[in-house]
Length: 279
Image (tube, rainbow, N blue to C red):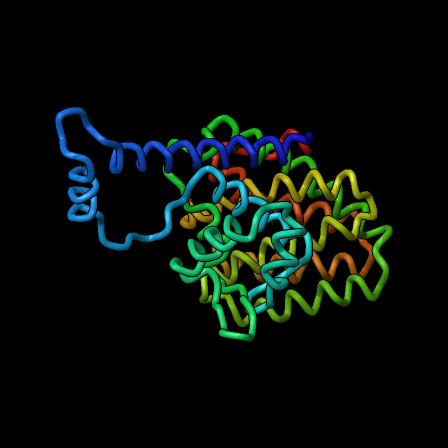
């Protein structure tokens, strides 16, 4: 059994036990009470419908959904695969997947059309990282993740300047042009920003490094969501355009320099004062 399957099965067991405990507490018979009397109490005290809970299993499925969306380059208003197919791809049961999708829909992260499918909304990634403070990456972990990003992304864009095909750079340029219209929409722009860096990492032609950056950016997104005051969307948009221009010119030195400048706010947001480590 691999690690993801083990975590999913453990989460399922924990959720089942929790539900079983509730059933016993509500429906069990107490000594000295007539048979069925406790069930009547249960009927009178059943709570009204409540929002979908975020269980351990739901959290695991949400993480898998996030990875699926980012890996496949999906964006706002893109359609998810049918429920049966998506459950098979994520290796989870349809009821468990449906619970996760219901949780996302309640938060405006998905749009469901009867008979038409399920579509991503701009709030999707923000909803995925919505979690209690105790479950968030601790401060030291976040510093290490950002530090790794500061090392890797300049390296990757330097490789991309040498290796990327012109049509791949043109595709990235088209993405940046489309993003300009989303500067005033914080959630949509963050998503576009994340997609820009994922696409850029893949242009380096090194799957080991690009996969490492994808893993890092998944965690860095929490930083963007929780500390928006450190990031200026308009400035980031201009910098994205400058990065693409450097790629078009195949100027690796300029691309690396501009990427280091672009990443400064990310380092400052976690207290890394300079980029001396990669200068």
